[in-house]
Length: 337
Image (cartoon, one colour):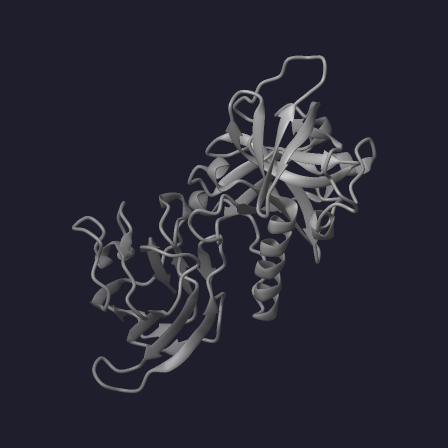
């Protein structure tokens, strides 16, 4: 378990995203993650995380849990120094936490650490409450959300709400551990790997073959989010899925295909495609559809098939059969080479 005063004190981190808050960094199978409240992300999908002594890392935020659950997961890049804890450090305290002294650990954006004494007043199945104690007068303030409460060095809860000026509500770590374990184990079973964290929105859009839109099975969500937008423009194609959605494109000049890039910006708040099938057809009409690529778009919103053996193609069909979350689905660009 993580012990305050040891190297493990680096695990609480400050989070600068949609809001400024806190989180807890941990590693699992070589990947560095951080857990934080969903409301701290504030709809953003990027974050800067800071640990003790100012160690920092960039992160891509995922919100795969159901609506109403104030929980999000960040995937860090170059965050090894922040991830000395493991997921098992969130599996619950070693003994009863009732009537025990607790401490709320907060990290500033400059890497300074603050330890505020608290006493646990209420313990429920999903959450617990604690109020500030000690000689100094402390009140809940902005930036505490996501802070972890520790008892005897063990994390016992993550701050998600305030109740009055001196009492904070915490999501219990047992609930956090259960949901993270289930998510990561499920993804591992299906071969989903954590995405490399990169600046998807800042990445240059590569030049590709000229395309024409032949058909899109899903209706656009509005007059400004038409399927034609995936060929270039300032707006995305946004649609409400009612089953697998297909997009058919025609190569206007080229007769072969070796690479396809599908881009879905996470900044808009819509769901990103997940399961994607790319098929090609060498005929302008009729003909047989052949699989060019099949797999999952990474949660960072950038699917790149990489350079593959060039195949004869006049038409391309992209089928999206699932998304990373509920709601409207967004596609920004399709580029083929």
